[in-house]
Amino acid sequence: MYLLDELNAYSHDLDAAVALVPLQRRDREVDHRDGLAAVMTFVMRYVDTAKKMQPATWQGLQHAEPKKAIQALWSQAENTLASSCGLPAFGLHDRDYIAYLCEKKTASALADLLDRAPMCPTDWPGAGDDLVDVVQPIAMSSGRRRRDGRQYHGR
Image 1 (cartoon, rainbow, N blue to C red):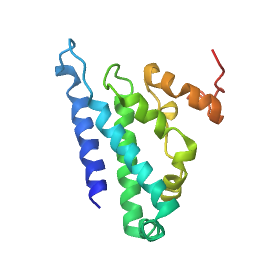
Image 2 (image 1 turned 90 degrees about the vertical axis):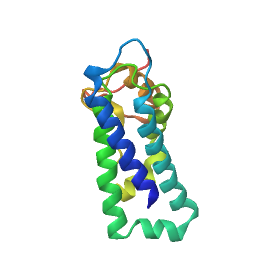
Image 3 (image 1 turned 180 degrees about the vertical axis):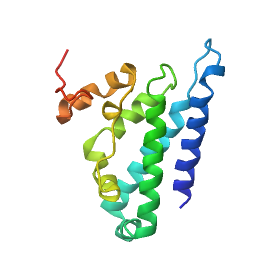
């Protein structure tokens, strides 16, 4: 599956960018987080569409080999994205993609393949407040709790 190759490639790209942060010039904007967040959003949407509208594709995704690959590569992507969440200004459009990743209604099909719910930045230790603020309205409406276990409340 070429899409999983892309997920793997973007995970490694962001991982390298995070590792090279000490060498980064501070006088320009970067979009390192955007690519992985966008591909993760696409994978989530692809899986959701397969479950709802493509029974043969959905059945194929549930076979042991593709399912294990999706589980491994999605976990790698989550960990890589999490490692960048404490870095401010590391993406230009990442907030939109990450907000989508945190929607429970769009994550249910992927959760079936992962045998767990996909993680949201509010669940990641060390996530920067700039990203947590993006998902706070979603968290408030979905009943999610903050990383420290407390319920979100309006400002």
